[in-house]
Image 1 (cartoon, rainbow, N blue to C red):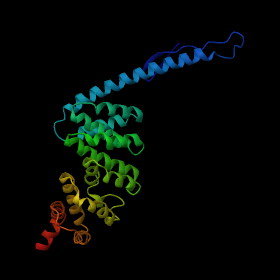
Image 2 (image 1 turned 135 degrees about the vertical axis):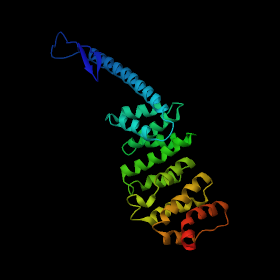
Image 3 (image 1 turned 90 degrees about the vertical axis):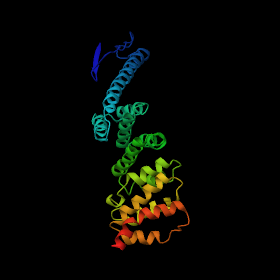
Image 4 (image 1 turned 45 degrees about the vertical axis):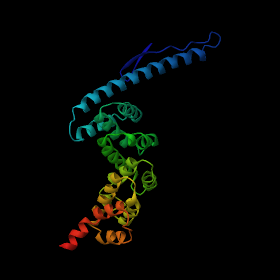
Length: 259
């Protein structure tokens, strides 16, 4: 007999009845039939994933500037309601040489990460190694999405974990992704917690990261100038990197004082 599953026409093997005991089926034939369906379903799913992936790559390739349509493409994949299928599509897209396609993959993984530790791990371990700056910008957005879906306070252990990661891109995904930090729930009520997480990175080896830290602290200074003044007053400015972060973090404070 045949069955239509997910729009696919599958041939199912009817279980064989035992001659002596007609109410029992012979396990071997039953399992063989189940295996046939599983193989057909797996093959069909793979073909469907590849068709969708190819279509997304062609669509993404046409996006020369901005990320809106790339984000929309990710949302459309998530809207299917098939989290496992969406993850497979994302993993396929990460293999593409088209950076826009990898951006779509990163958006998808960010939407899955709160409920799928594997998706979060791919962001941290694989996407962070991508050498395209645009993918890194989406990684920051994806991490913020994870925090928003998880709850920023509940996400604190992961925030600390990523801030201590070996990859500068992973650390920056946090510092840049959560900007403006004090506009986010939890940090809005606890700006000192944001400053405590950001400040230790003032002497980070990565200038790319230090600039993000300095700009994030400057953002906080708009509503909490005294908090930033108190923090930077404790810094040793002998190091060039620390001086760089200090200059960025206090830019608005200096302007305000001059006025």
